View (cartoon, one colour):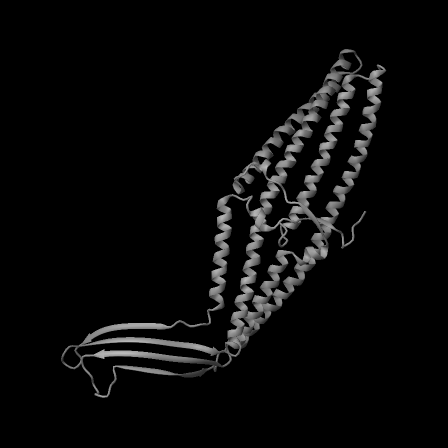
Length: 395
């Protein structure tokens, strides 16, 4: 049955912090250090409009007046804008938007890494189930070979039937080798990301969400929304840079000379004042402003496009999930049929109408189908994982 856009999904409920512990200690340290770097860089950006207090000292000697004299000069100065036509406010807002952008970008990167870990774990569990299923299929194939050989010896079948049965068994045994190769590849990925044995790690539990919540929590969309805010503040900063700026400046100087040209010359002095400045001519003014405006418009379009793409992505997810659910319904019907056939075969065995091989073959097929149901669960979980890796605070 087709789900509506309000279709309820199973979603990972454990917090990101809890799942980081499944990564190896080096990845955990890397994520923690990167968070500290981003935090300090964002704080620096927030206060970047505050100018430093500058101190300088110099010592010199010269013989300009026919004899050697020395001079020592110490100076402390400050030139601090206090009004930039909104530029200071916009700079602070830009720092906030940039911090939010970096936080989301880092979280998205962290969750992708954790998602890769759980993807490799699910694939390992899926391969283990496929190997278990294959063991029952191989048992059934061996029974089929034995049957065909008996029928061939009895003159009931020609050798081609035996050949096909043997080839089918060889194909299953070759499939086992392929699965073992896949398992080694998944193990390699898993061991790169985690120090723990994969059988000791549990997947997060699930809860229900709606499509609306999926879009609201989507990290890629949040990243673009913060990028839009960054571009808006950059546009405002650019506009304010061509408007008047008011600055306070001050200076303290101390100078010691062996020779004074004027008696009234002081060794130390202070100066301070207010400065108003504004660019009068910049032929690129309007182009710079227009470029930043266009970047902001482009960022808004990217947000709208991403929202649209996420709705399509969610719709595709639902379609894949529906197909898995249909396959599960078919498997349930097959299991019901196998249960009935096993009962009939057991009765036939008592009556001498069926053989033990018939019963063993059916039981192998029944066990194989039951494991196939578990494999479907892993495939469904892989679908969910791909979805929730991109969501905020879901893994």
